[in-house]
Image (cartoon, one colour):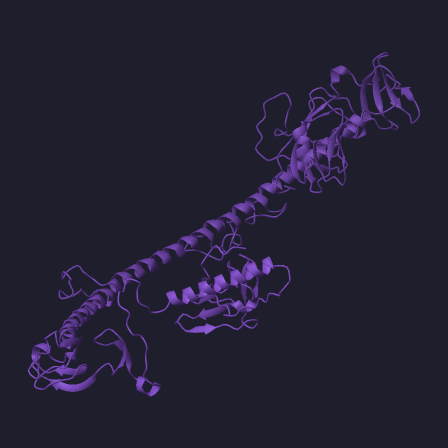
Amino acid sequence: MTVSTTASRKTYSGNGSTVDFSFPYKFFADGDLVVVLIDSSGTETTQVLNTDYTVSGEGTDTSGQVSMSTAPASGETLVIYRSLDLTQDVDYISGDAFPAETHEQALDRLTLIAQQLDSTKTRSVRLADSVADDPNLEITESAANRANKVISFDSTGDLQVTQELGVYQGTDTTTTTAAYNERDLVKSTTTAQLNNVYIALQDSPAGTALTNTSYWALLVDAASASSAQTAAETAQSAAEDAQGYAEEWATKAEDSLISTDAGGDGSTDYSSLHHAAKASASASNAATSESNAADWAVKTDGIVDSTDYAAKAWSIGGTGVTDTASAGAAKEWATKAEDSTVDGTEYSAKHYAAKAAASAAAAATSADDFDDRYLGPKSSDPTLDNDGDALTTGDLYFNTSSNLMKVYNGSSWDQVAISSTGLLTVANNLSDLNDAATARTNLGVQIGVDVQAYDADTLKADVADTITASMRGTVTTDNDLSFDMNATNNFSCTPTGTGALTFTNITSGQSGNIYLDNSGGHVISAAATTFISAADLTKISTAGKYFVSYYSADGTNVLVSASSAVTASGV
């Protein structure tokens, strides 16, 4: 290999987590590296190999790595440098082939040692190459003579061990009254230089001024420090005054004006504490208003003021609203159960709707019974009634081929015999009936049983009617996805599996609604006579609850549409 770099040292800053540190320079053995940890105070600790750290990558050019046992913390510095033993381990055997690789490694080692020595030289105190003279830098004094001394250069520029920094000789006036030796220390008693400390640069005769820089150097400028102290004390006093004024602006009692000494205008300036107290009072008033507003909105356990209740109480009920005569929440007037009064006398909209639905169902039943008894005009004997059910004894129909009324005797149709005795005449308009009530009973149209009595409020198909109360049809539960249009108009369906949306007994002009609860997400298809968009089929095949409307325009096919999923059943 070649040695292409003179670098042999890496420095890293700790972060408390990193433990692996690269050393991208050549070294031969783990012990060739020195690892030093420097803490935040500057104390250096040389780490111990295989205890504090391990080394890998020896013998490589750039793949060396030091792995610390504990990650250096933030504020700590890790220094890694190469330090080879100054030895030569290569032994050439006479007569052997020349070991080129071993020889090259020995040269590399010598080069790295040279770099190491050069680094040591560079990091030491030395004379610059430009210094022309060759001073004597050898120290010959013994340890005892060197103790508590300093190293300096003598008058010829050679290194020497000299006396202490200086020997304190006490006080004197600025114009000295005694002779002093080199490096003596003297403190001045003259006012202009009071307490200043000077050091003799050379032996100084009596009468030499301490301010004479040929003989003396100023070590401690106490006079200037004293002036600075006085200025500092003045500044401190001003700062204390400012602190007092600042405290006055911050904490002076509520409604107390700031003094003019503190910069107040004497009429409108108050402290932060004053303004905070006022803001707190405003916040308290606002909180009270907020509480009152909340009571008017949602209180349900009694009155808000002396006479009235909250919006929520009137909406859904509350103490004094739902339990007081001549009162009642909006919710109660809308939904209270059938036959239960809201205010002691009147009923809810739900009650009247249920009654109307019951009346409509009774009327529909009576009409269906009559339709099943009298089958109407037909050209031949029918084999099933109008609902497609089996005939029953007593069924009637008018034969348009023979112009005869016929009655079913249980197995066949018989002509109805006509006797002149007891015949009703047209001119009498049924007034010659022996007993009209019995006749109606016999005909299955007994008032109050089979049909309703006349009521001016009964809806009529050929006039414009005004509906003043809610009307609802009976909801038929049919969970197999096949709906008999003769059964009812409105259905509720909760399918238990896949199936086809189908309608039977399709009647032209009939329409209705289906509440479809497909929470199970069953796949729903359409029968051939059911017309529904692919998008709606996909929609109702997804788990959810849907409102489905249907209508037949031709008595053969049914048109169907579906809402988006709803969040409540409505039933």
